[in-house]
Image (cartoon, rainbow, N blue to C red; front, side):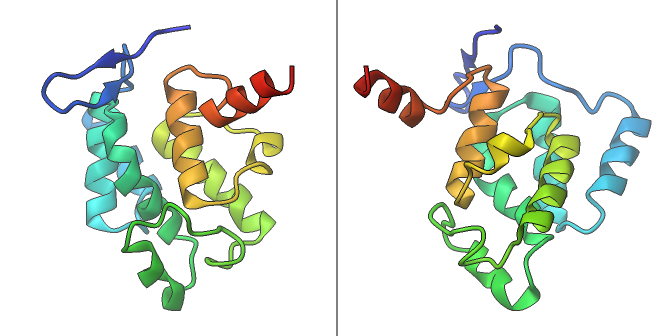
Length: 151
């Protein structure tokens, strides 16, 4: 698997070969995919696709989730939403979560299967999972610790 690198400029971790929005046509596709997202979310998605900078994920993930949350609950995503529960606090059901995953896969160019989705409970879980996946890690650090403790 590819190793992450540290960015001296931002202090963030990057993909060794980040996916690029290289051509205007690719940017147009991303714009079409993210058409119901805020301009700030679209801009962060473009920056992420150009640079692979995972430090953008804490702001980007809530912006992507916001598209699926009822308007009266969206304000909850403005504060650091890491501990917000997807089902209980944001009202996302299983079908909506699957739709979100397909959307996140397209925007972030990452793969999440349904078995993995079932383990994600909070906005922070999604961010950590996607970051780990982008960095080539197979399990989140907490899962590795739990496995080590059980042996």
